[in-house]
Structure formats: structure tokens, C-alpha cells
Length: 277
Image (cartoon, rainbow, N blue to C red):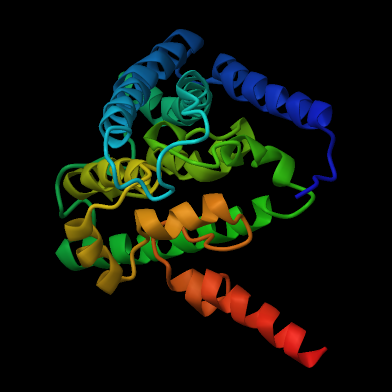
């Protein structure tokens, strides 16, 4: 897809985003020293382990003989994947620094360990189920918007990985990273409680799930569980990298089926157009 914006314009905007997010720490109420310490802490705790896990999964996947796109013909782009993941991870760390800075300063945040502080068991269940559904709907539409001519230039980085591996899972540009990870800032708000024993497993699960979606092979047992629950799968998402006009779903494929963006619906629509002619 040809983007409306030139590569130079896209790069300029993305550099501005990185500067703005990193420089915002100078205005932190807790003091810039606390905020930047939180920034590096967040990067070390979240991003470095993610890159390490992605590298390990890539090493394993590249040795399998049942890759979804067959024997690799395209470059693995290992170095580029690490670089792009580190860039998107820096954006995530800039956002995470806000709640971490409040914690470092001894201020209250939305992260709570007592279930009653989170509103009780029923509230926690409903909030998490509703939150997952709403956020996943947002991720679907974010993805579709990035496939418009206006915004595709900001998504082109990710689609440079036509035959993806786990290291390309979070290899996205700064704008896409911001649109993906911004909800973490909500943790800084005491008025928005997140029950930690559920929140942390969900975050780890989101990271692991995204790495699997891009790993390039199928774990049959896992996909036998995911498909009936309408979760995305490695085979489903791999088709998006091969055919960028379909399969925009992130976690739940129901959005592709409801909104007609699964590959079968696209193929059927084209067949009907040809028949009508």
C-alpha cells in the first residue's frame, strides 16, 4: 500500500514522538531524577526479558521443519528485529515510567494487591473481562487504521517482516507503539484500580501471546485450545503478513469475522464482484 506521507515525513514525526515521550520526564511532578530512574527500570524489567524470550523462541522456530511459510527464503532480519523491538520497547517504558515514578515517590497508584481495594471479586472479574474486550476492539481498529493510506507509513516497519519470527512481534514504529501501549499510563491513576494478581499475568500473557502469533510455526495442541475460544492463532496472523488486506485481529478473531476482514470473506467478496461483471 502506498502511503500519503513520504518516508521522510514519517521518520520526522516518529523522531518527534520519541523526543516528546522521553523529554516529558523533565516535567514529572516527582522530579526528573525519579522519572528517568523509573524509565530505565521499566525498560530493564519489561523490554530486555521480552527481547531475550523472542530471541530464544526465534532460535527454536528456525530449526523446525514445519514452518508456516516453508523453508525460509527471506532474511530472518534478526538485528533489525532487535532494534525495532528496542525502539517500541522504549516507547512502552516511557509510558510505564509514569506509574513507576509515582511508586518510586511513595505515591498511590492504580495497582492494588487487596481484592477489596479493587472493588471485590465480582467487580474484578467484570472489569477485566470488559477491559479485555474493549482494549482488543481498540487494537483491531488501530490495526485497520494503520492500513489506511494516511497511516500505513507508520506501520510499514512491521510489514517489512513478510516471513515473521518472534523478534518481529513487537517490531513496530513509535506511533504504533504509542497507540498500542498507552493504556499502561492508566496505572498511574489511583481512581482506576488494577488487581495486581490478575493484571501481571494478563500482561505477561499478552507479551507471550504476541510472540507466539509471530513465531512462524504452529503448536497444534495450543491452537486446538485457542480456536474454539475465538483467540487469534499463529496460522491466522501469519496470513496477515502474507496478505496485508486481511486478518487484522490482535487477540480475538471475532472482529475479523464480524467485520468481514477474514481472508475467506475477502475472497468471497472478490468472487462476487467478478461474477457480477
